[in-house]
Image (cartoon, rainbow, N blue to C red; front, side, top):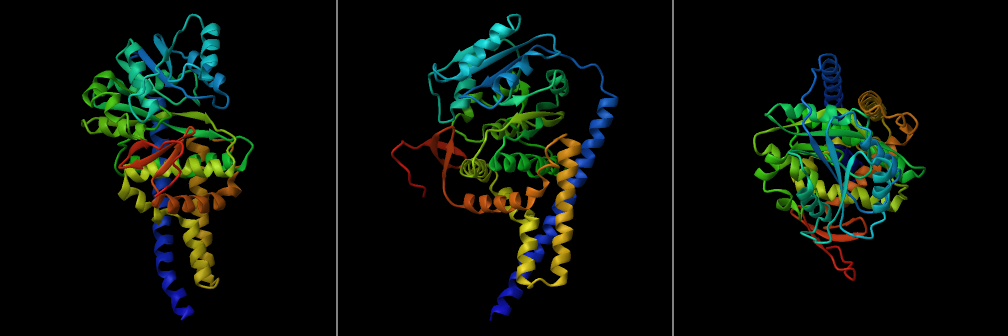
Length: 395
């Protein structure tokens, strides 16, 4: 009986190995295409139109290296732009960093908007809606508080918006890990799992979403989709903004530039909670595509095949081949596309990262609660519903 069960288990394992291998090959092909386009684009890049732009940065609390990340936005090679920071709590500790920035860069137009009025469950989007009232320009950009950029960031990201067919520009990013295992697993996942999936989506169907690392767009398109308040209750606000602008028939372009995020020193519990929040947000935003991720867990499927076959030679070969493709994706995307200097150092953690990713995927299929910046919410159809502090059930 046991022998029969093990033979049956081998069937989905082999299917998983084949589908994962095809997925890794698509990721490699997509990365090579992106690299080729980036190199040819850099060689033939014309002088872009540089419209005045308002950069919106919603804040809550202190992120690692936050002041240096803020400074990088004040050192842009760009003729006219303003930076608008926004908080909902007048006692938010990030305010002091903004005040210090204003003192260091008195010639920059740097504003702080305090918005205690909560317009919906997503406080970040609530802040953005109120920050927008202070924005002077018709070209807008949003990025997360922990993003650090190069001096030509604004110039290169806004360039594609000169074409009317382009409605949004977004960016890939790499994580700089703190000295904890959770933080290292997070950074490794960004460079070797998440960003390859973005490149594959770009090549197969085009990008119909935005990434919180950078969202550049025009005020006119924002107004057409109903403004920030139209998705003020959604968890995946960057996805919603990009998806709704794409719904206008406009392209969402992936910029050639890569930005950087400095990750907190997550312990394993915090890392798992952060991954679970992200996973459940993706699940609710793109249920079909999220379920399909089960066919991309190459190393776990190869390990199942190895166990079910009782370590037969073919299973060892399948594991070696799958592992080779997985490492190839990690190196091509992590090192060549993202210029992530930490990938080689933490490459040995990839099997553990992939097993944890599978555990997160399984856990995300059930449950409807997420924790975000210390607050708990119930998630339904992509929308957030705040849970009172005394309620802890997860049904």
